[in-house]
Length: 345
Image (tube, rainbow, N blue to C red; front, side, top):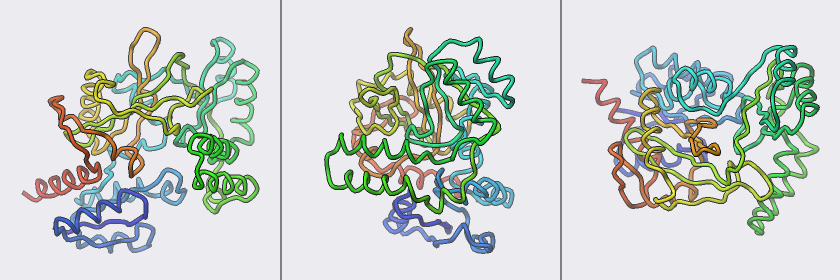
């Protein structure tokens, strides 16, 4: 058995490589952006590539490469079931509705007329989102019809940049107030410079337009709950909202205590993961005023490092608690290797 791994520093690949070295797994580093990537992986049983939502090149072809390799009989992480809806809130709306999963009520319109008509008969506040973006970037609370109409007009004219530099700068200011360290200060300086100088990624990204996406606002949520399912394992973190804000993702304020998490939430997450046949599934939940849970969005990826490494344990699919820290990327490797071995029998 031999694995192909696309190395991207700071991604899952760091620990995938670490795991291979620890367990003497044969692997080779490949470049998924190369013209001959199909040839590169020919002598391998599977490809592992943690592609990023903010990489416009990956967005162009990662899904197509994944499906092509799967059709040739190779295993891929993330596979098509796991990644086709990644960083696509519109795609997730259709998927979760089709699965009859408890998604926060969401609406997407492809004509200005339909959007204006709907807004004229809805109540506020509502949440406006672009289809892509993580860490609460590209998310706004809309408090009036006039504000909604402005967003609709822009959605069907010049549109929005895929990367909101002003929102990202405000995020960096938030992190400076929270952390008060040199790293956060450097981040603010860098963010300020980015207000005036576009990155190469921004130059290559297209503008978001031709649709508008609104989601129901569920008030009185002081936190959201992220549950991550990798195979037969689940772990969770509570993410508290930012001061004076309604968003939790990207706040950096979290809780891990086992008693914070409703076992029914973990069970529902396992069930949805099985229905969707995912290798890795991160679900963000919030509650309505009646205490009913709803999914805001889903993903296959999450940050590598202390944020999840600090989880004090995880659940198995029988909802038994297994104490102790772990590296989630090792779980991915274990499952991926097992899937290759099973396919060869």
